[in-house]
Structures are given as structure tokens and as C-alpha cells.
Amino acid sequence: MDERELRLSRQVYRLRTFGLALGFLSVASVFYERGASRAAWGLLAAHGLVWPHVAFYRARASADPHRAERANLVVDSAMGGIFVALMAFALLPSVLLVAMLSMDKIGWGWRFLARACAAMAVTCAITALLTGASLRPNTSMPVLVASIPLMVAYPFAVAFVSERSGRMARERKKAVEQTAELREQLAHIARVGTLGEMAAGLAHELNQPLTAIHLEANTVMELNPAGLPEDVQESLSRIGEQSLRAGEIVRRMRTFARRGQAHREAIHVGQLVHEVLALLDHDLRLGGVDTMLLLPETVPPALVDRIEIQQVLVNLIRNAMEAMTAPAIAERRLTIGADAANGHVRVSISDTGGGVDPAVLARLFHPFQTTKADGLGLGLSICQSLVEANGGRVGAGPHPQGGAMFFFEVPSVPAQPHS
Ligand code: ADP
Image (cartoon, rainbow, N blue to C red; front, side, top):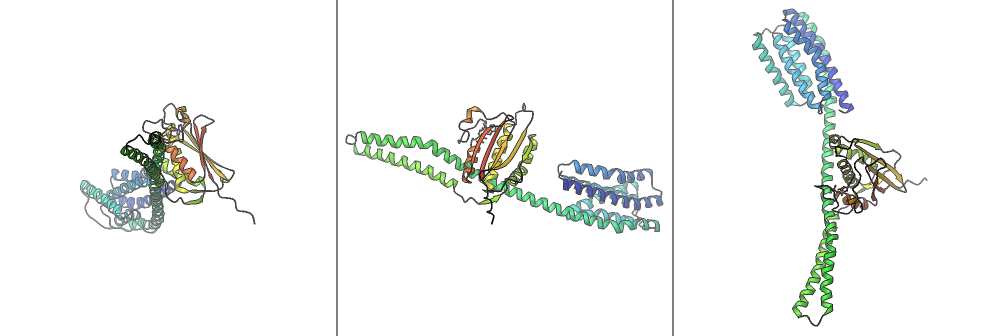
């Protein structure tokens, strides 16, 4: 749970304890007046003394604290319903208890409020049925006095925390939307990149046979121009032409897939690294990978296309994660570093996996080189194309502490001349 959420959770916890203390006073005064049973006192004590702690630890331990908090609030309302019936519907405390338990749900939306109220009504009805409580709504002076703090202090505290909680929920929603947008952009560029790289790979692979067909056809025509029947000559020249055309089509496909305006801007690579890590956070945690960042603030901003460099980072980090999945690897550490050199920013991504397989080492950045059963072998060649399109270069080497180290360099923003 992040620090701010933990703080909020603590505030809600304190508020609940505070509200419970006030509610406790009112309910206890009614119980006392009516000589409530031991079970009723026991329940009140559990609600006042045990429940706030349980609720707090539930929210803190949960992966989704907002969800846990909502569940806690519904339980809270349900317990309130029990007390309303146990107090035999004493007018003022009952109204206050219901108002108080509803108030702190308003910040969570009307549907949630309705759900919490329904929980309260159900437990109230069940308790009334079980205890045979009759409707005797009266309020005596001591109960009225005990209810005053409830009326005065609690609404203010609730309003304060609800406002903060609402603001945080809005911020969280915005962050989720931004992440979704980024994910979509990255997926798009990955698709375009894969297409481009496939076309590039195909162009490269097909170029040779197509050139050979063209040459062979020409050679036959040139070797014996007179001895060939006219229709054979025509066919041969068409073969030559069509093979050239085929080569041209493949080349055009490659250019088309690569088209698209890069939008370069001055960005700190550290920021890009943080954004990408937020995106991959779940996978990193799932893979048990520790991340170490060496991103000094002195590194100047780079002049790059944000999405393209994020894509490069995603590919390299994913490869590093995949290299560290073997169960035999005891320490899974991903190190991302950045430094500045010769007008460039250099970013390195190292892992503690098994290192690069010698079988692919020589042609690591060529398309279709893979050692993975389900790999396409395009990730690194996409990285190379993207980094080169941003005026930089990529490379790889062994990591001093074992594993692999990949790096890329991109131009940094030139320092402003002193005037
Ligand atoms: P793919 O991931 O689809 O195989 P890539 O182009 O991303 O394609 O990678 C090509 C190959 O390079 C991988 O199959 C793997 O053998 C090797 N490789 C890439 N990154 C690493 C790494 N961090 N550690 C070890 N090998 C790697």
C-alpha cells in the first residue's frame, strides 16, 4: 500500500475509533438506562474495542485498500443496525446512529450508501425479530446529553476525511486512465514496430532470391539472345521485371510500416523509467524481481520520442525479466542505470539471468533471432530501429556480476550556452 493510502487508512481508522467512542457513549447510556443484557454489552464492547483494529489491519493488508475499506464500512453499518434494535429504537440515539453511519458513506457514492443502509436495515430487522424488541421511541435527558458530542463533532470529522478520500480516489482514477492510455500507445507502437520489423526482415530475406531470379533471367537472355524463341524471351524479360517489382513492393511495405512522425521532446530518462516500471510493476512483483535504480539527477534530459523510448525500455526490461525466470536463479535483480557521455544519455539495463546465449550473440539485433519457444525474435531489432530513429545506438555486453547488460544511447539536450 502506498504511503498516502496508509495515512488515509490510519485517518479513517482514527475517525472510526472517534466515532465509535461517541456512539459508544450514547448507546451505553441507553443500555444502562434499560438494563441491557450481558450479550448486548459484550457486543458493544467488541464493536468499540475490537472492530476498529480489525478494520484497520484488514484495509492495510489488502491489495486494494479502497475495496477493503468499503467492506469495512458495510460491516460497520450492519453493526449499527443491531444497536438500533437493541436500544429498542430509542429516538435520538437511533436517529443519530443511523445518520452517523450514513454520513461517512456519502463520499463513496449513492449506490454504496444505499447498500450500506440496506445492510443496516436488514440487521436491525433481524435483531428486532430475534429479541422481540418493540418500537418505543423515547429519549430521556441523560441520553440526550450523551448524544451531544455525536451531533457536534462527528459530522466535521467525517466531512474532512470524506473530502480527502474522494480527492484521492479521483487522483487514482486519473492515474489509472493515464496508464491505460500509455499502455494503448505502447501496444500500438509495438504492433507497428513488429510489422515494420517483419517487413524489414522479409525484405532482407527476400531480396537475395529476388535479385537472383532477376539476374538468372537476364543471364539466360544475354547468353543466347538470338537462339531463344520470341515468346520465351518475352517471358524471361517479364520474369526479370516482375522480380524487380516484387522487391520494390517489399521495400515499400517496409517504408510504409516505418512511417509516422516521431515527436521528439526534452525528457529525463529517469521519468520514462519510472513510468515504464509502474506499468510493469505487477509482472516484476510476480516474477520476484528486485529493482535497483541508479538514475542520478545530474543526467541531462534526452531529446527523444517519449513513447518510442518507453517501448525500448519495455522490451529490454521484459527480456531481462524473462532471462531471470529459471528457478535455479537465486537472486533476481534488475538494475537500470543512466549516465551522460559525449552529448548522449546512456541507459543500461542489467539482469542476473543466465546471460546471452552464444547461439544468438553474433546476430542479436537481427530480426527473427530467438532462443524462446514462443519468441518472435523481433524485440531487440525493434529496439534498434527505434533507438536509431531517435539518433542513437544500442548494444549489449555481459554484466560484470553475471547475466546480461543491454544499453542504449540517445542524444541529450545540448547545454544552454552561457550568455
Ligand atoms: P524474443 O524475446 O522474442 O526472443 P528479442 O529480439 O527480444 O526476441 O530477443 C532475442 C534473443 O536475445 C532472445 O531470444 C534471447 O535469447 C536473447 N536475449 C535478449 N535479452 C536477453 C537477456 N536479458 N538475457 C539473456 N538473453 C537475452
